[in-house]
Length: 68
Length: 133
Image (cartoon, rainbow over all chains, first blue to last red; front, side, top):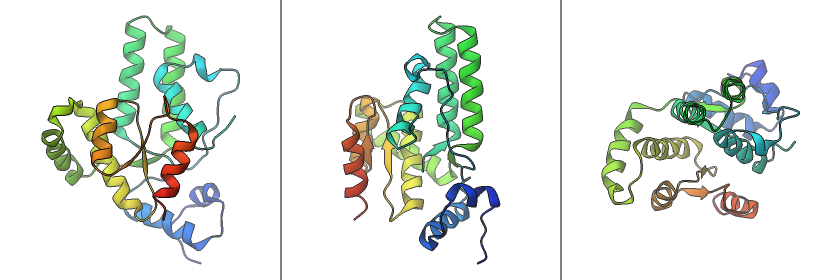
């Protein structure tokens, strides 16, 4: 199947669902730069000790399912 | 999928700078925070370029919500979220923010809103499910 997605983007997408792929291609066609890696928490630094804004972002990501 | 714009990144960097300037964080923590954020910004977020029409839309929103006292940057975030929602349609988009004027303006614009500082996680789930019908 032809796609405009790069290997990195496909690797992150990690699904054969054509609807998911079509959605990612739609985003890309609209000028959206797709993430190419999953966010990973840094070991050894408790979230509560991070500066406020970073803690805010990390909390968002955790809420979205990127758990430690 | 988490969307971000250059302007959110700019706000994070300046917020970190303010915390360093006011002595709330050490130099090391400041540098580490910047490095980690830059690394994440480059590869772990889905990044939207703020379109010209979005910037124009932000001017209209600034007039519309003048009574709320929403900051210039927050108005730009709101316009960007509207742009992202249009791209994602019909998939749901929930704007994450913790600033009360921005939350009120976003709700008035019909966006789903989630405040991670005060809302339980169930609110985010509900917002996504309700908007995915």
